[in-house]
Length: 67
Image 1 (cartoon, rainbow, N blue to C red):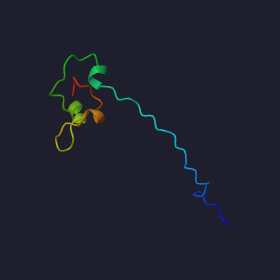
Image 2: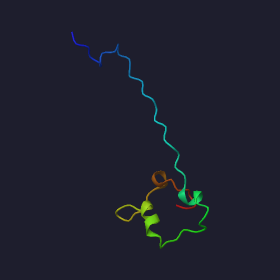
Image 3: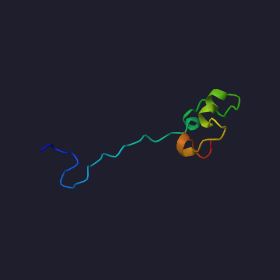
Image 4: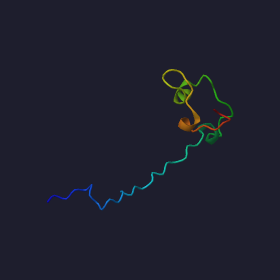
């Protein structure tokens, strides 16, 4: 009889939780610049979707001040 991995005495498989790194606000981490330059399109592209909407904090990692 062939061994079936699904028949393990009915015990569920244990999974290790994935630890994700906490996102840090790029504007707070960069102490060199005192303000956000609206003309720097390369930096701002990371925070806007393809449709032109501002991405949420949980995705970008920005703080409330810089959101």
